Length: 258
Image (cartoon, rainbow, N blue to C red; front, side):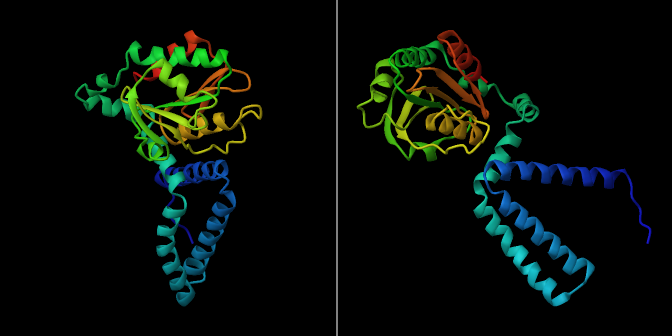
């Protein structure tokens, strides 16, 4: 039996294929690939039973399961859905579109050297002493849920304070420090750990936590390695490794004004 097949149908198929491919990549990164495959198998069986075989009783039962299953999937994959929506919203074309209609409020986000330099100087000092640290700088994505996992500080950004928090005998040195709106909001915070298999094995848990927060938000994560003293930055799911003081300052000055 013949049916009309036009350019709109080709675009439709391509869009569905791209969506499935992106979901596949997302599930693979989060180690939920088997669940994704199981869902696809169930969908194929459901379509075959209801559309091809036209089994009304079994089809209606599976219809009910699908309608309830949508809610279950939202609960089960809330982190993946959040990451997908963040990636969509973080796309440069959409950001430029909304900036065009903004009233100049983005200028208020710009950070001056009084904010950046204490962070840079503290990182350089901790790098020389091989003191491990993880500093997360909030940008447009709120990190209130992360702040709640640690101890509230709410203090001005100060080099000595940063170094004291990450001092090896400090009770807060193992967690992450959250900086928001030119203030140190909290320390000892717990971050989501990235399961990306492409992260070099020599990078430790701090680096994986830095990658995790950079994948789920637009935050900047600065890491000082306890083993090597090297400084790294994680932004938008990518690492910038072995940074000098000048490079760190340049990156922060550029990214904190976006």
